[in-house]
Length: 100
Image (cartoon, rainbow, N blue to C red):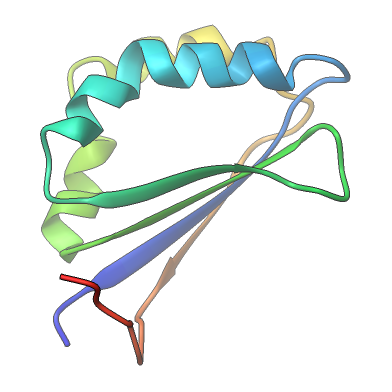
């Protein structure tokens, strides 16, 4: 299996989770739609301020996401909305059910 996965956990300031999502959509939506990456942008059901983003694809594409020219603007725009630095984890899937 040559897929990699990234898990990003973000903690928005109280009441700012939807605004963080709007910033994500502004910068990342079109890029992801045109890529081979699978991304899941999720709200944590047990924490009204937690966001979990899960990406699956080849390692180079996942790394390339943070190297896009718009990424520093995304970070700048979300900085004031986050309660703490995001946590990023890279993982190696051992099993993936592929619907393709």
